[in-house]
Image 1: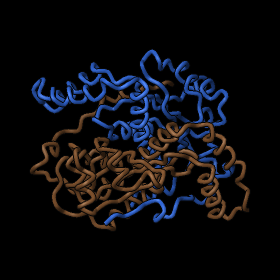
Image 2: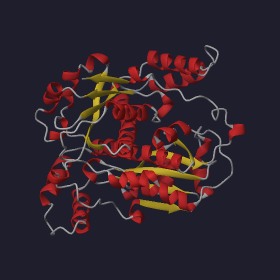
Image 3: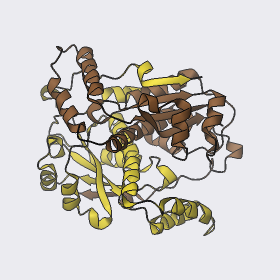
Length: 209
Length: 209
């Protein structure tokens, strides 16, 4: 199975070479993330693709994750701070248009989703958006592995710094999780040759037949 | 690209046929999820694979998601309620063993992870575990699609009911998110032929070069 081969090939790279990932491959990875499932299908996060070295230098300040600056590209998954009725209405209108449905034919869906989110706090919205972004993160790792691009998913970054440098707050976004992309430096990455460790399947999963 | 083809093929199935997914395919899907990345690599969730019809009947009570009972298998991603020092120590000991490292050689890693989690509340632990489970959810959807098995990711379920029926609380687990598996009933699923709708790439992603 391709996926299992690719998941076995990947690991969280600590040290990258200077080789850059082609823009074509980056496009494929982003396309895959855009196709990822999200709850209610409303894609409550955005992706920033950062190659600019000065900005990455700033973003990496104070983090133990040197990959923030020392990699080819950095992906920032930026979750929504709020799921607004306007956003839901716009998204559902787009769905109607793309599916050649009559305007208003998905009003019931729109209202159901809106009613679900309207009593929720900003904090609940943020947690929910983050979870959807993590589905996308998983897809990004798999997409990169299929293209033999290395990646490092990271939670160890300063979210406030990211919000400031990327101007996320004014767009009602926040940095949820990040991934660096590039090529592993086998000679200098102590993890490059370490066997992958996972739980025994019987400990990880339980069958109820 | 295989992944993009598979992501385009899949959709959130509303109506399944009676055909069962082979146990071999289920094994592959679980194996893929087990290989999924998690923060600190400590896999803070478990998977329940439920084919038993009576239990699924109970789990689906009160939910608008009929797929909980009307599908071949149900996967329940069950996040940890707590990230304990004992769990971290056991996990790191397993890593040492699997990598043929001397006992204690990863003590620093163990202590760093333990110190990171020790000041966190139970609620923070739950949110964090859920996010890791969602990475696994994305992998499950992709694994299923590669095997041409249909799937429906769902948040619309009663987590308390799941905890009770599956006895999750006593294992310090909670139901994070669920996925049904089976085969699409094209004739009776109004979504089977609907074009997939996603944001234009330029709206979804921003380049900073």
